[in-house]
Image (cartoon, rainbow, N blue to C red):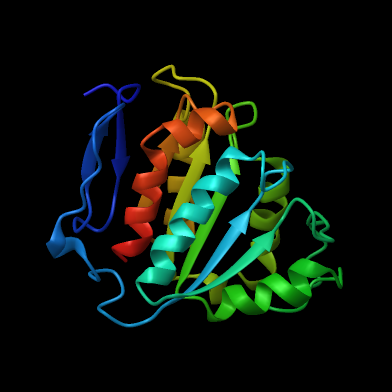
Length: 218
């Protein structure tokens, strides 16, 4: 099965399906509410594209996911990593891996409190040079200040790329899965939207339906 031709949504064995490039997405009824066990979850969605809501491919997919998750009754908090006041980790260790960061910015005051009480974290990024955006990497590096307390959460990755080669998302997928392992997260979904270099391309693709159904099935 070629990764160029198929998307995999991984979800604790409950929501694993493969979709061809133009095929219809279908979530099996038994997959509904497996992740949340039928209870409302607190979900944090971190957008990191520097493009506007009207232009961004990854933001569009994130919105489709949010629509599905809201329909399922979950509580959503969104954070715009590209346009908030953020600072990269300085490696100073003043936080001691469980304390306030030296930067009194939007990560410290707006995002971190929401992440600490969240059940599910959703990382959303365009693919830049085969990795996550710099804006998202800043957020990930700042996990350091609360590493242990962010352990054990559920997570989802949503990424878009222009490229369609079978290795396009390989490095980013490996990074994400290593992060999941280190943070002791429970991966419940991955959307690797290749061939989505423009807004019109992603809107014409099946990925919007995939994102909606992933949110709705939680």
